[in-house]
Length: 228
Image (cartoon, rainbow, N blue to C red; front, side):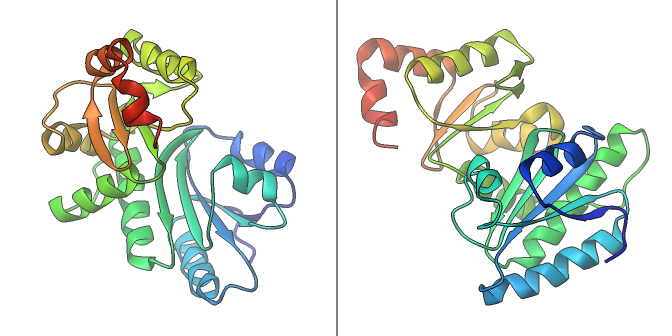
């Protein structure tokens, strides 16, 4: 495929080099394997998305050959699709769910268009947003919805949340709510909690920073997070 936005990743260094060219660009990473039949369908879907959206950066990663990259994104099955903006995780979709991938791409490219001051034709329904939020909440045993990312928190409370999880030696993934206003507002309703950061364990909301800090003090933290 000759599209300049479509790349077959040959090494971790190659991956980092391509990704770092434009950290504001939405990237789709397709983890696949030649032996997995569902990957053939997703490979076709991904190629079509690359043709349809030249502004989308598409990276093909053969999961077993690029094991270091797969492990860094905690890919446990193929096909798996990761959507990023720079180094910020936007979505993670496991399995050959072509519709979910297409909706997610349209949504995040539409979000980028709004940031750039242009109108977007891509509107996500309430049902689609709910499905996407649940998928993000279930992307790993512990998910932190925060402002910024663990290496560059964008508020003091998010910084304290990252420090707390690291002090307790809890492995976690994160989602930057500053990059997705729909998720930011949607989570406030879904979890009935008006502020961030928000801590998710096994797909369920367990509290904000004050609640989790109190769990550490009371000893409840190990019961809730230790079995995650």
